[in-house]
Amino acid sequence: MRYLLLCLTALFMTSAALAADGQSTLTVVMSGFKNDAGLALVSVFRGPDGFPFDTEKSVRKAKVAIKDGKAVAVFPALVHGTYAVACFHDEDLSGKLERNVLGIPRKGYGLSNSPPGFPAFSKSAFSLDGPDKTIEMPIKY
Image (tube, rainbow, N blue to C red):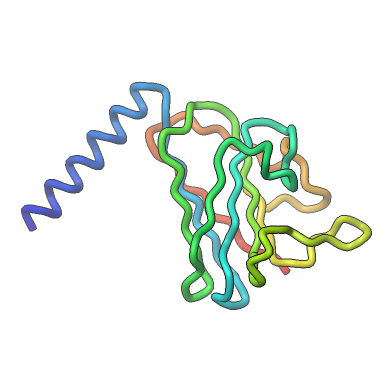
């Protein structure tokens, strides 16, 4: 119990320090994966350049395990600002999001705010300006 209290206090103090420094921790909770095979590949973008398919232009990336149809990615120390998140289910571990000739993903994918229609940064954007933020993203197939 004492150890848990110490850990929670350290987490709170770290979060407060990051917020005072103009930084936040972003937690992305993804759900609706059709199976636990492969990994969830998550990309955080600071602007529209590259969003959502060119992950090389993202400011942060993560590969996370899927368990019971869910995955969680944590991105600490992000500078306050406007962001959007894209992810996809990389079942075959190819590291690529295959799309058909119309540009529609052939793998499960998710975008922050789950906007309908063609993916645009402006539709998926959210403000990151507090110590911690958690967003939930359903995966679509």
